[in-house]
Picture 1 (tube, chains in turn orange, blue):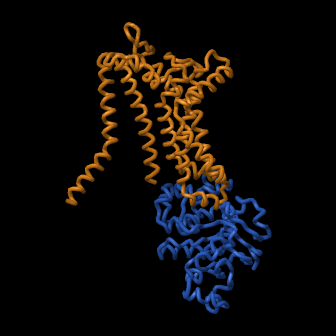
Picture 2 (tube, chains in turn yellow, purple):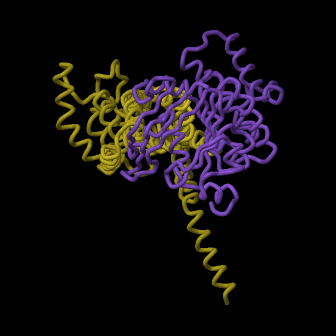
Picture 3 (cartoon, helix red, strand yellow):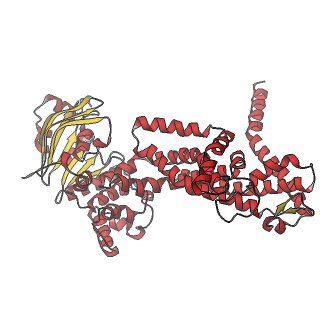
Length: 289
Length: 250
């Protein structure tokens, strides 16, 4: 009897354990099925390198280059803003701030992660967009630049909390050892702390990028959603995620447009998969040491 | 002999609680002073007061004066002080880099060396001083994490020697080492006496008697007795000292 109960419980735990893998495989499989169905009817090269996204014209053009560039531009801009700020924030919290300030900072960063993206998008739309419009004197504030700022804000908690963990897990003996050799605090931080925590910090940045690439709601509200190849960051762009979210409702299940959106999803999935894979690589490296 | 370090009426507190009380000690140049005593007697606090490592802790406060030569260390620049007073910790802690980089790390930061050939000279000399050169000369560029504990500890000594300090503090340097590695580290310590002034905190009473010129016995934050090692171990003046070194408590 005991043996049977044992087997049942083990089986239940096993099923729960592999559920996440099952889900990933299923999602991946579904994406592949719908995405590849699209490539049967539409040339892959034309899809990826095509400069025009006109799903409603005749014949329909499904070139995702503008929205890929849109995604990359917004992501890249967000990284430029958030990576230095995030890492320095993490350094300040873990190494420099006195205990009182540290606790306040830590909980406010964690609180930031809890703000729904639609709220951030909304606040950005009302405050940031007019501000950017007036500041640079451009026809619209709904630009890649505004999107980058908003996304930077959203990636911040990920980057700060994970790099802070990495920095804090640097053994205090290393710091003490360096200080006892007459190194200044800054030399110790730069040469010992940052160096030792580097794999963790890179992983943090990668996960932050993953968050930025996949973000939909806020960018949809802020970047202007114009699917053309932009000349500068002060022009409206459209990202891959926003395209899927905005157009999925207009499609007929099973038609070309519908499948094209799945193909975009596939591209997006591959990108985030690569980013996460790199992050894992660095996180694993950190643990082995 | 000239006094290298003079401690005058030093009181140390953690969270307002006194852990070291009215301490007066003079340490002569080129002398090995060992500090013995049971746990919580303030040995390590004293050692870490000497190079102001304690000052990094926000809960720590102190009163009193410590002179290095004739300068009050509490008015000195912290980095400069730690360059003159090196410290070796209980656990061997190589910095996470190669053997070579471990040694040149501090001299480079302090601007003591400029070119590669000077670096090579310093690395070789420092490693020879701790008799580690023959053991590691073929793999200077491999990670310092990969050599044995005893070798790591001697590497840490070599790292201190590379910045040419005047005083070296040892905080239970052999507590994690096997007897043979311990013997090698002790040999290095005695060898270093010719050039440096040494303060050694140890839990191993026999080690104190083997290595040091003078021994101080601490108990509950107070200095109970300090005397020539030969004398303290043969005829201690205080009952508590005798009890401790004969192993009756602690």
